[in-house]
View 1 (cartoon, helix red, strand yellow):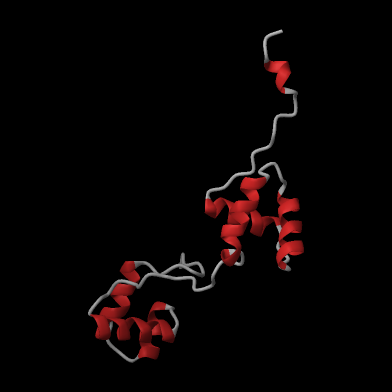
View 2 (cartoon, rainbow, N blue to C red):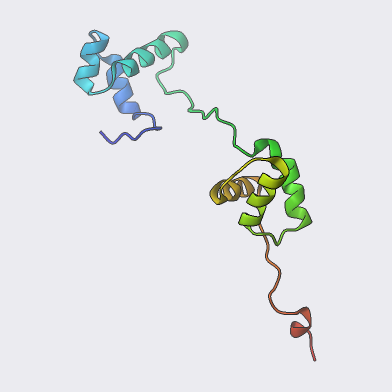
Length: 128
């Protein structure tokens, strides 16, 4: 089977499982799926009349969701900070320890970037 955790089985397998007759255990064994899958698919069809899988949801809120407004203000205030500096600021100001990856994913989700200032003086690019 080409199934990976977190993904629904293919619709063709779902239709074969739902059209098969027999007990939950027999159908599960025949198609090499779990008994709970067969039971949930049958219950969904009975309850909603729908053979398609439901939308998958992750009910875990992002770790920095509550701090997004103040984090956005901090990035605006000094957007030449590094991710490590923002992680240190988060721990110092809000008592929440986060890693670089969490900070980067949060900023990315918010559509913010950390723009670095040019390393050469401004007068260098001006005409002399």
